[in-house]
Amino acid sequence: MTGGATFFDEMHEPAGAVRDAYRDYQGWLSEQDAAYLRRKSRDAETLFRRVGITFNVYGGQEAEERLIPFDMVPRIVTASEWRRLSRGIEQRVRALNAFLHDLYHRQEIIRAGRVPEALFRDNAAWLPNMVGFTPPGGIYTHVVGIDLVRTGPDEFFVLEDNARTPSGVSYMLENRETMMAMFPELFMRVGVESVSNYPRRLARSLAACAPAAATGKPEIAVLTPGLHNSAFFEHAFLAEQMGAELVEGSDLRVEGGRVAMRTTAGFKPIDVLYRRVDDDFLDPLTFNPASVLGVPGIMDVYRAGGITIANAPGTGIADDKAIYSFMPDIVEFYTGEKPLLPNVRTWRCADPESCRYVLDNLAELVVKEVHGSGGYGMLIGPAASRAELAAFRAKLEAHPENYIAQPTLALSTCPVFTGKGLAPRHVDLRPFVLVSPDAVEITPGGLTRVAMTKGSLVVNSSQGGGTKDTWVLKD
Image (cartoon, rainbow, N blue to C red):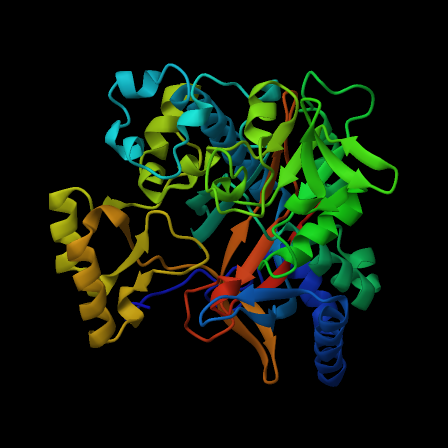
């Protein structure tokens, strides 16, 4: 955190008055006994532990399973704010899908000089196997998570795009269910848009992307790497909520030009596979030959039109943080419009001049790996020690092309419940978007991640962050 920085408080005006979005909630909160609220906070933790809402954190030789902290003070967004955000999110998601189609076909944006070819030519997320192939329905990004940060009353920025396998939607749904179970009277008092129909909408959106080989009602399955994956709870949760089968690679095989799953009545063809396995492990015959998580031959079936894979292989190129820095150009190129949601200013360290600036100002910047995720491999300059800065400087000088840098943003704060009352903590927001040939659907709310440690700007669950229920108010 930079010295003297001021942060936008989403609940309170600078003079202390409660903002309009929180007025009805504050009215309810002022009537509650502090001991009752402390008991409810403990109840929420017990419920999360009983349901098994955990997250695997990787660090040593084995993953550590942790309970994701849940804060019971909701993050509240007005209907008018949400309409503005939705327009910007839809514009961005449509541009991302068009960009991916173009990259794997005519590459008009490169011919036009708007994006340099070098950005993807040697990029591991770029899949030559997808060149010239159009996924069923023309959809690459079936499920997208757009990470947003707020810095002022009308200032929202896109922090990053998650177009590969965005996670966290199960926590969004469980947060809402927990809040409604604990405080049913609160939802009678405050009109909040529902998020509970997300699994049904997800199933409908995936079914709309079924391949030509599908007959009748499309058969959907969720492919998980297995029990030890950090997001396994979510994989199982979504499969159950959608009424889809949860499968591992060992449950699947290629049979008669289709991908089929093992059932008690024999093998049954799958039409849509919502995969939560990374590209490299999807097909050992095409990618990593040592993989036991995927299905040998699935890429041949895919390219022949026998199955839909969501999200499409090769979408990871759109997650690349170096590509992110070109998103304003990408949005304008494919939509003919200026971006409604701006990017955070970004320095690409592959550029020598930018790299010199970053090295000269390392203590003031946030530096991220271009292929990184989950908060791993990043440096928050203002919070780093001299030793950490020196170690990171050496990595950056050795491989500048692996990094981008951004200013340390004054992330907005929302209150969390502590033993001493409400206290501000920094937050971001990941709305979830469903894309089909007919529609772009944005769930009203999303996952609010919160830095549970005072002063921390790191909200990732893998780094100790927690979650909140996100309310979009009805008009």
